[in-house]
Amino acid sequence: MTSGRLYDIQGFSVQDGPGIRTTAFLKGCPLRCPWCHSPESQAFNKQLSWMSMRCLGLEACNSRCMKACPKDAIEEGPLKTDVQTGAQLRTVHVKRDLCDNCGACADKCYAEALTMCGKDYTSEELVNRLLQDRNFFENSGGGVTISGGEPLCQIDFVVEVLKGLKENGIHTALDTTGFAPWETLERTMPYVDLYLYDLKHMDSAKHKATVAVPNEQIKENVKKLAEHGKALQIRIPVIPRFNEDEENIRATAEFCVGLGSAVQVIQLLPYHNMGVMKYLRISDGKPLEATPPSDEKMEHLRDIMASYGLNVTIH
Image (cartoon, rainbow, N blue to C red):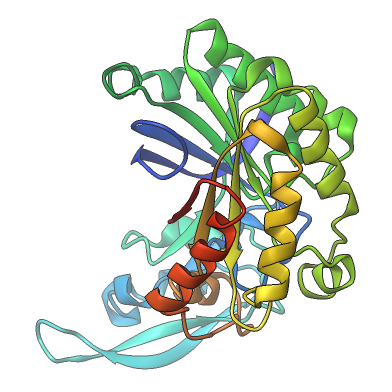
């Protein structure tokens, strides 16, 4: 058995493939999308997460987290007002340049304001956990989706999990950026019923400038999946000032037409800012903040792609 690292398991998922599904989210991704709604998925290592709203105040816990940190990376932070009593509470601030994500402070935080993001499973442990939701799958035509991050970064683990699920008759989907050697992606084919495949931009230079990797390999891999007759659900995040222009949308539509009948549906995923607070829990940096595209904009883009004869939905 191999081991893998996850940051979440989400039950009753209805947007990651057909029916009611359970989605396993793996840590680690080679892309650096500034709009990522799960920034904790990018790094493979475990990360310290800080949620101010859960903090009971340093007075309540006798500064347990500050005393536990071997790097002196926890310092007194801003005051916050207790919503029930109106009292001013002393919270903490994580000095990210000193923190090495050892987790000593999280072990002492009984309010779970400080927690470690990332949990390791063996392939057998994860399969057994996912099979607990079998009744939901069988009654809805659902199954399990392996997502990330980028699952292909943990390919040995992913293949073992997918194989275990198929041996138990579970419908499987793989949510991927497609940025991996073809030989890596090819290993998943015997065990995947549906690929949720991200396409972010047709221009490779702009793709690399924005998300840190080019797109040639991504496009070639999805062509090969289509040639092998694998079912595809294409996902396109619609990001302001990046890929929402009509020229790129038409280029993407033409590319998808070229994939033929393998494409079951295209999902347009409008940018949202729900990842901003998650980003701030694990970093002092500043994430992308933009205005989500309007309903009218999304409908216009959908109509453009649908004019190419594609089945297009808005997430």
